[in-house]
Length: 196
Image (tube, rainbow, N blue to C red; front, side, top):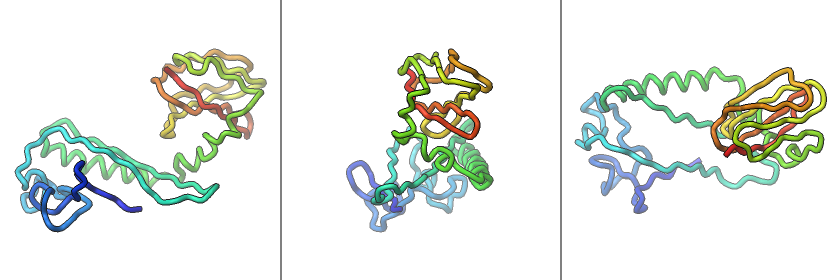
């Protein structure tokens, strides 16, 4: 995977100073700890703290029919102090995030690889309505079952167990698209739902 790092005018990031207009390109701006004046950081470059915005996309390359790839990202925040204290908070949070990922024996993609495949969404014996909804939905399914709702990022946002027949559920979830799973025995039946 290649990481392309450019300013919005298409100029590449460069090492030293403010990261613009130098001679050696870099993929990372200000990788140093601003608490250490000997490292290249916004503090050592005398750049005032302010709002920073970015756009991120992943380009993996071509995938053949039937191939898939799973990417996991962690966006971390370390706030609560001034800009220098927040760096120390970020370093702690980054370590915690890495430890979390290292401790996982499976990931969202492995658990949800079939969640959005069309053939799993076309199930005539499972009804979920209204769709779109305001978060209050009715699930109609025969026998005892459980309902799980996951965001498209894989987070479980709702779960209800030991349901039977037609059930009205107030999910209290935010607007967006979700994957609703009805689980019965060893089977999982999936619908995509939208909350407005």
